[in-house]
Amino acid sequence: MITIPAASVAMPRSNAKHDACQRCGSDHLESSESPARQRPVRASVGDGGRADFTIPLPCRSIAVCPRRARTALESMPHSRRASAIEDLQPVARDLFVSAMSRAANGVNVVCTDGLAGREGVTVSSACSVTAEPPSLLACIHHLSGAATAIEHNGVFCLNVLAVGQQRVSEAFAGRIVALPDRFAVARWRTLATGSPVLEDAVAAFDCRVDHMLTEGTHRIFIARVVAAWEGQGVPLVYSRRSYAGLDLEA
Image (cartoon, rainbow, N blue to C red):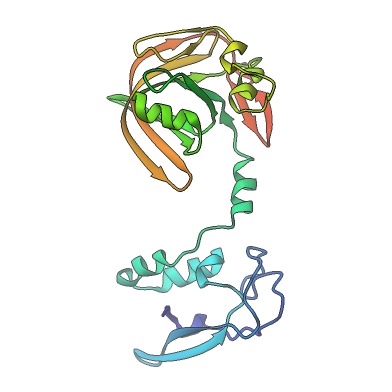
């Protein structure tokens, strides 16, 4: 049951198709509810009274519409907001993927070596965590062989690619099929952990895994940086499903 002020309760008509939210007009959801689907709403009426309404809503949840969610949450007492926030629904996957593709991400190759073998994978979801102690994180799909190898080896190196190293990125992303050994596309060295360090990378961070988390389809490795190496060149960037470089002189 969602508690909202009576003033914010409307009685929208139920249609077979909802191209936009009837409350705010936003095309935020392709509704899958049938016209007969209804949802109970409890509203404040009079002096502290309550009234229960069962009304057809154009959305699966009051929370999927940003404007409705904001209005409802702002009107709630703080004690009720926590439960209301838990009811917020995730955005549609396709919208999330499309919106995230517009972000500019650095391109990295995460490599490991040890008893579990030598593996590597292209990663865009990586960032620093703290400078004291020096640490970073990398997100890798759980089905990747690199994720399993890192889990068992306990070490990895985050190699930051430079402009001109698109082929390295494509190789470790598995997009060059006729390539039996993806490590053959570049020259490598090692630092402290023995993980492969890409020569000519913009930077490399040799790491020891401290924590591993699982969220959805990905493993999140939080690692302590035990060695670092600075190279030359301009970082390679990936945005809108294309490679680009940074204009550092602008």
